[in-house]
Image 1 (cartoon, rainbow, N blue to C red):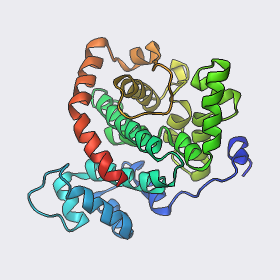
Image 2: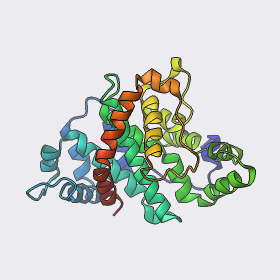
Image 3: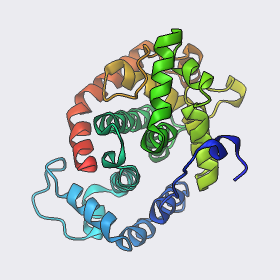
Image 4: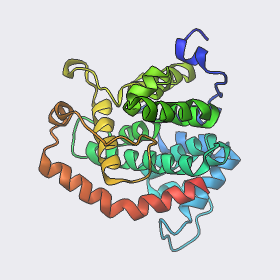
Length: 281
């Protein structure tokens, strides 16, 4: 590994094969239900988790679901895709491996809510695919999760530096050479995550100029702000949430539409929290 950020980490985990396959499938518009089912059923742990979630109170199905094929029929391709990605990702970086388990659980709640918010934004924008928006939201803080799981001392150093030097969270990260967004972008390259998702991981805090701005980056930047502003979960950043107005303008998210999305997110919050509980169990 030659990458300066990855090279600086003392340990970089390998991305599970099944998770890499799911990400590749969800990035391919030609992916069929059968393609996804074939990947799921080859992984016993993932199959068990997906069926457990499908049979949970979150969905309220009247009859027990005993096969992935049946779960897909009842819940739909998009929902099964979201469950698979969430189960695979949280299984890979489960809160139980973190020094601060509660903090990790709250980070995953934040991340899941950002995925839901990004998907809600995408449904208002014809140029953003809803499934891709959910995936991007779920992955956006992966650099932060890896740091907290495998290098918790570095995260604690950032918070101490914030207090000591009166810096913002992002300033303290950069001063400590521990920028979770940059590390996330580098991890995306290292793991072979599609470039469009890697851009989100690297740029969701500082979106590029409008001429280079990508829809997924813009949607997740806005979604991250909405979720932090609503206090759903905890991203680990104690600063007041901010959003770049130009990004909202670029997306066409005026005040009325933002309020509508926030109302929808507030209404869905109990369901998001129920799904989160199933995923981290």
